[in-house]
Length: 477
Image 1 (cartoon, rainbow, N blue to C red):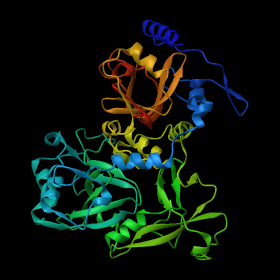
Image 2: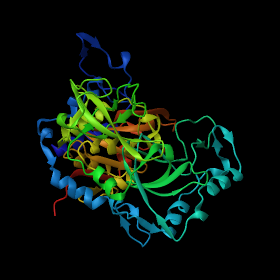
Image 3: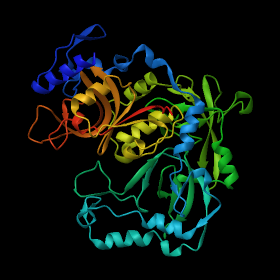
Image 4: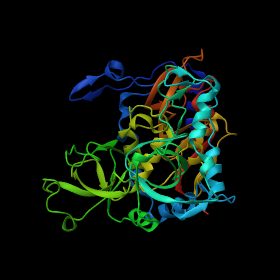
């Protein structure tokens, strides 16, 4: 089998990759469809390949890791916050007080964008004084020897910022996809530690899982104590959003949560019927899950609001079983979604979709692609020194749902089809193998693509650039 695949690869690389393979007709509602009639696909991708079941084998429904193994993985990989003494700690290990030197270092370590001298802010060119004022707004001079830490939760999904501002930065005046002032995004109802606030008192500098950055105070609900903060994280009954997103019901009596969009992987504390009111804001409980979500009161302190989630919503009671089939099905729920740099536009970039998918299993991956590949306890393979034929041979035995990485981009592996390896990922731009001019097409979507027919700016196909593989299962010791 491996020799056959190698022969197919050699043929594929020698022949013009611009030729499309023939596929049998696709029928939707008893009507025959041509791939290009209504839906555009990348080179080498047929309409059938846009169906998750196309990539799922019978063995993919088997559990890969159990809850104890997932907890072990999380415990081994969640120490991502600088302790200020040369080591890292987990968010839950942050104490009621921390050193001011560490907080200043965290804030000062955040750089201005590399193109600051030529930056456009909200479409207008700015000078050095703009960045000087932003740095002044961080208010680091007000940090004392010791910092009293406050604890809370985000109340919405939004972006964590490099500086305390909602301005939009780019090196092109009309590019609205890549905001250089975004650090990352954060999920709604995420725990955080408040370390400092801006000079104008409108922003908090916080540490969250994997990142530190600036968040508007109006999007944070503070707990009365660290103990309460920890208690709120330790919930045993919950829903997980398993669709692309869940839209909370419009509710005129719950304006803080009404209509809010909750992304895939959001955890919602469940309430038992006998522990809930019989009527919630003039609504009966019939046909709904009851959840209790944090909101911010006018004084900034946390409170709880009951919300009803229709039972037919795309949610799971507890974490989904971690199977390869579930990884693929979740990934295809995001197919065609807009590319969201660092979580912009209520969407995600390449590493963001991986984080959201695996939160559905209770697995906490870092937010950045290269950090996701460096987690411990899983099966990692360095492919940098392999040639294309060797990579094809390896991928022929690689399970679907594994991660493939090349500089700046991470993908979810789908499998082989007619000797070609395929992936799904959130992509900014691509060039096909038939294009040798270096010209790129803006995609900015989640797409399925062939590693043999998609190229980088160097003119080489994606397969050649793949440098590492992570099979998301427990490493054998």
